[in-house]
Length: 193
Image (cartoon, rainbow, N blue to C red; front, top):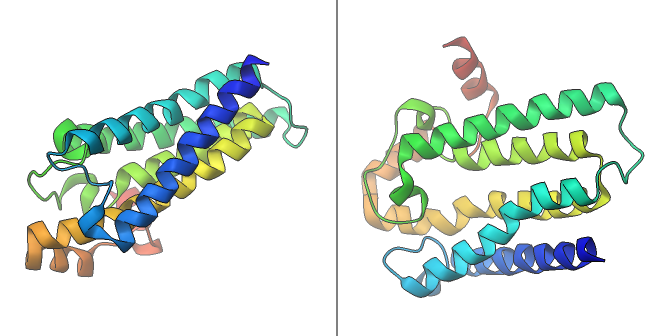
C-alpha cells in the first residue's frame, strides 16, 4: 500500500516537471527552469526533483524484482550501467558546481566533460535510469524511470533559451561544436582520452 502511494507521488512529480519544462521551452518568459534568482521556481523544482530522486531507491526497495523480463546477468550489467551513469552525472555536477547545476547564472563551461556533451548530467542520469530499470527489474521503476528520462530529455530545451540570452555568441559557438546529448564522434573522443 505504501509503495503504491509513493509511486503515485513520484508520478505526480514526474508529470509536473514534464509540464513545467515543456512550458519553459515554449514560454521562456514564464519558465520554471532554469530557476535564476526566483525563490518560487527553486522550491517548485527542488521539491519535485527531490521526490523524483527519492523514487528510485524507495521503489527499488519496495518493488524489487516485480517484473519478469531480466535475468541475473542482465541485472548485473544493469547495475554496472547505472553506476557508470550516476558517476558521470555526479562528475558533471561537481565540475559545473552546485549553483550553476541548480539553474543559476555562472560561467559557461565548455571544457572537461562539457567538451563532449552540452548536457552531461542529463546523459549520465538517463544512463543511470536505463541501468536501474535493468538491475531492479521493477514495473514501478520502469514507469517512473521512463518518465524521469523524459524530464532529463526536456531539461536542455527548457534551458537553452536562457543560455542563449545570457551567453549569446559564445553559447552559439559552443552549440555548433558540441552535441546537445552525445553523438558517435563525442563518445569515441571521450573514450579515447
